[in-house]
Amino acid sequence: MAGKIDEMDRKILGELQRDASQSLDEIASKVGSSKTPVWNRIRKMKAAGVIGQQTVLLDPESLGLEACFFVLIRTSEHEAEWQAAFLKSLQERPEVMEAHRLAGDIDYILKVRVANARAYDVFYQALISEVRIFNVTALLSMEELKSTTMLPL
Image (tube, rainbow, N blue to C red; front, side, top):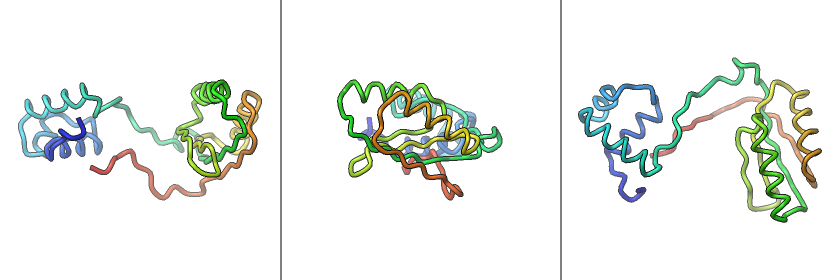
């Protein structure tokens, strides 16, 4: 559907990214349309997979998750069963906010949200007890300068 997204769809998506709790009337007013066409477009974009899960963004620090670590992982293991075990381990850990397989010297990068350094160590010890990892480097984010879930439309 990416080729079929027009300017009106982009406006609607922009409004939904900004605040998905808006009413259809509010969105329609902001994009210069009426409620029914906006609803039909949203429904079509959901059916096509352009719009996925809708959720609420929480403030991690308000919930006691004050430490954000970026974890760089190098491994000498690249077999399918190791990768499956690694993926399973990541999926079972709510501390892992994001995980990416990379090209280059580092194999994986994780974004991990925990209460403090001690909580990170608990996470780290559990991870290395479940899968063999060649090298782990943890980088503590001192300050979040920008964070967004909004895609550039």
